[in-house]
Image (cartoon, rainbow, N blue to C red; front, top):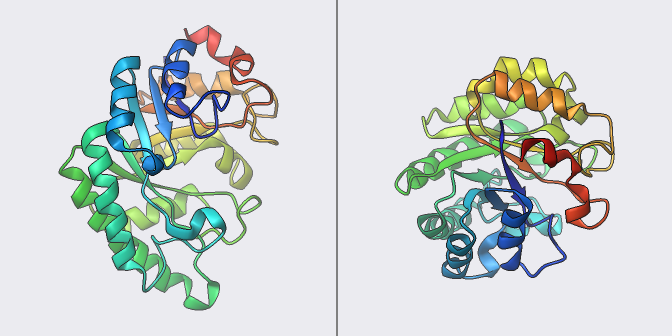
Amino acid sequence: MPRFSANISMMFLEHDPLDRVRAARDAGFPGVEVQFPYGIPAARWATAKERAGVEFAVINFPAGDLTEGGPGLAAMPGRETAFREGVKRAKDYAALLRPRNVNVLAGWPPGDLGRERCLGVLADNLVHAAAEMEEVGARVTVEAVNTRDRPGFLLRTSAESIAVIDRAGHPNLAIEHDLYHMQIMEGDLIPTLERIIGRVGHIQFADTPGRHEPGTGEIAFANVFAAIDRLGYGGWVGAEYDPSGRTEDSLGWLRPYL
């Protein structure tokens, strides 16, 4: 059975941030993920984690102005120092929270900088991040994002994500494979998983269209989850969706796995 984690940056928003950890556990999730935990001291997150008895599946590295629509840090020439400062901050959080993965968001550097140049910056930054996170037992992932929701995002397909970690060449790198984004960009979810599962460090999902819970769109999640099991994937499978109502009311898909 897949090990499901809940992304509490999108789910359980009916609760205060730290209370979402317990709410997720009470709903049946043994793991949680937080996109950007840095607004709350790591020690407070760690206390909430221990009290709820959950694991942290993934957090993101700080991404600079990406959340406001800027190009971010990871692939932006001239922002290497800022990226490394973000790695240091994420490392401090990872040392306490012990996430299995820390994810890099490539962002959308301006096209006039040249795609190849930006991919080179990203690869170099991934090497640095992977080496630093190895010291605290966390793996570094990088994910592709669909360009319908995020026009101009640098990494757009699973193949592009794999290519950049191959370019970086560090053993502590994998991809974060988001089924929502890849259904939009690629389709063929199960054949793709069969081909790349050995490169996947973390899986996320939401249905499409709408980015809501399973059962609201076109993806046959029972088949996809069965394939993930059949392929022997042992990592986390993260629910990262926008609930169509109260989070607790959106969890019908989870009940067969409890």
